[in-house]
Length: 489
Ligand code: AMP
Figure 1 (cartoon, protein in one colour):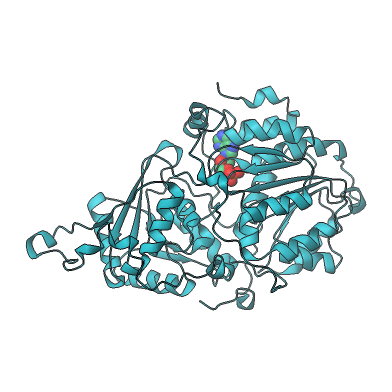
Figure 2: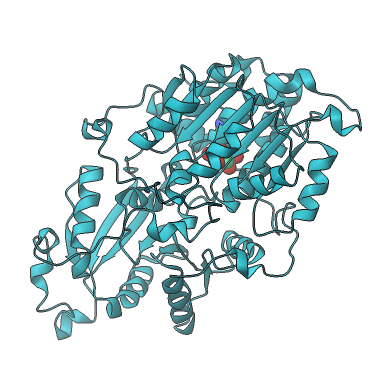
């Protein structure tokens, strides 16, 4: 049975906004989380962006805050009542835009603050008073210290993409922010995984949370065709181009592990005639949003990106994803390929594997509990002149388990941490989370409690609300603030 928004008795302004969005039925996370959040209980939710999670927390939260709605111009009448924390600027911007749409017919004010942008316009908005504040942790602390943001009337706090926040090293920032909030509040924590670190965070800051889980976080969509091709670094671009040509694919994401590699690869592909743009943490905020927008508008064929783009970016229906580099963390593989094969459409995920990546491939195998075959790409022109991989045929299948190869696996989070907003403090005692060995992930996959039919129907039936062309209203392009985007890959 498909759960309908009309069963929720949402206040008229919220119901009107939802109807306007064209949503026909609730997504599984919405069906489970909204009734719980409406009761005011703490929630620990396992769900990724792209599942309708933003509406799952913001609609009930708005409904509960409507009692404070007023038209007064006095800032004192508009204190921050709900705080939504996210790990990256893109996610913060995206969530803030969605909240604005849901709150459109109410008097509730919302604002977003994140680093890499001028503080002044953010300060002005905060000083006018906002009920819902979306923020990245570092910038929020700046505003707290500058006394622009007062959080003593917060009733709801949402820790969104909590695992990502811990990966980036935001734990000390989060702890500080939470210390400014009233003890009496509702806390909602969303995370793609329930690693021991996440459970510890929840144990410290949540009270008797209701656990909600809609899909196994390490599940890959069955609609995605996953291919692993062995390729030396020099051959990888050739494989990408051959796959695009042979499959007639117009647009794809190409994931790399480093910012430097990202810029370099984008330039090489561009030189080779593919319309390419790069998305990584060394780009200024408006450059990043422009890159995304150009891709959304179909002006570029390839978006070469680091993992900063792997999570949450609201780009649907990418026909293919290439892992130009095998991700260091198997969980990132799941996030990356989750960009394709959405809404029941078929997608292709191609991972290019060099001999030193075999250990990483076997980590992916373990995580997704699927045996993976590393193939040799069947170049058409090779059929006549022998395979380019000749002599490396032993890589096929067996090589990836070769434990003799010296491997140095970077610590989890090491690369990504520099890609995103820097945590304000670095505490040597904090260690980035290790790949989860939670027993939760060891048990066989169980179907989510909300039936898949309803999950499919919301995805298939919903009218997709795509971002309007042009930059987000929250982004007022200024000069490039390079210093805030630390380099170093
Ligand atoms: P989120 O996971 O919150 O980032 O949402 C991902 C996308 O799904 C956004 O474009 C939402 O507008 C869209 N969406 C959220 N809820 C629904 C729904 N019930 N039906 C259709 N689309 C939805």
